[in-house]
Length: 191
Image (cartoon, rainbow, N blue to C red; front, side, top):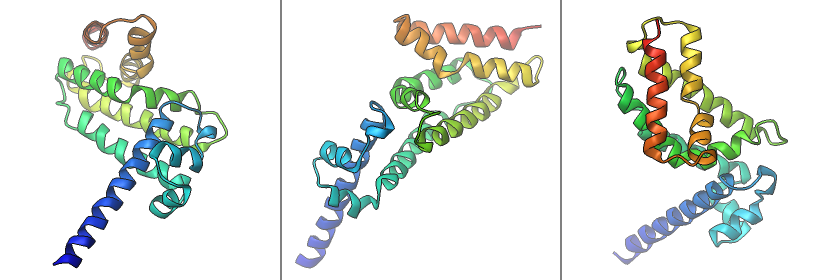
C-alpha cells in the first residue's frame, strides 16, 4: 500500500512540475522576445533547475510544444463549439478568446519574421484556424458568399481590431464587442 501511494504521489509531483514549467514557458512566450526564452529563463520562472526542465520536457522546443498543446486545447474550448449563424454569440466567444489569449498572440505576431521559426509557425496556424472559424460561423448568414466577403470578415474579426479598440483606444470589453458585432453585421447584410 505504501509503495502504491508513493508512486502515485511521485506521478502527481511530476505532473505538477511539468505544469509549472509549461505555465512558466507560456508566461515568457506572452511577454518577452523568443530569443530571450532560454532553458535557464524557463527554469528560473518555474522555480526549478535547468536539469529538471530537460528531464520533464526534453528541450526548449519541448517546452514550446507543451505550451502549444495547452493553448490549442483552450482555443478549442473557447471557439470550437461556436454556433454557426449566431453572430452575437460568435463575436462574444471571439472577444473572450482575445481577452484570454491576446498577449500571447500579439507577442508572437510581433516576432513572426524573426530568427525563431516558432513564431511564424504559430501565427500561420492561428491565421488558418481564424479563417476556418470565420467561414464556419458566418457563412450561414452571408447574403453574398465569396472570397472577398470572407476576407472582409477575417479582417473585421482580426486580433488587431481587438487590439486597436481594447488596448490603443482603451474601449471596454462590451464596447469593443459592440463595435465588432456592428462591423460584422454590416458585412453580412451588405447588398
